[in-house]
Length: 126
Image (tube, rainbow, N blue to C red):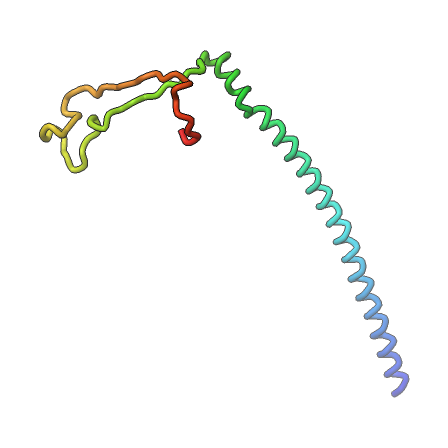
C-alpha cells in the first residue's frame, strides 16, 4: 500500500512539474507578444506624429490663403451677403395669400454688400 501511495505522489509531482512548465512557457510567449505589440504601438505613435506635422503644414492658414490667392484668385476682402427677413415666407401663410406673402410671383431680390476687412467685426464665430 505504501508503494502505491509513493507512486501516486511521484506521479502527482511529475504532473505538477509539467503544468508549471506549461504555464511558464505560456507566460514567456505572452511576454514576447506584449513586447511586439508595444513596439508596434510606438511605431504607430511615431507615424501619427509625422502625420500631425504634415497636417499642420498642409492646413496652415498662411498656406491656405496663399493657395486661395494663387489658384482661385480670391482677394483678401470680406464679402457679406445680406438678406431681408421681409423676403422670407411667413409661418402659416400659403402661396399668394395677402400682402404677407413675399414670394407671390415676384422675383426674390438678392442684396449683397462688400465690407472692407478692417470694418468687419472680429467675431470668431463668423
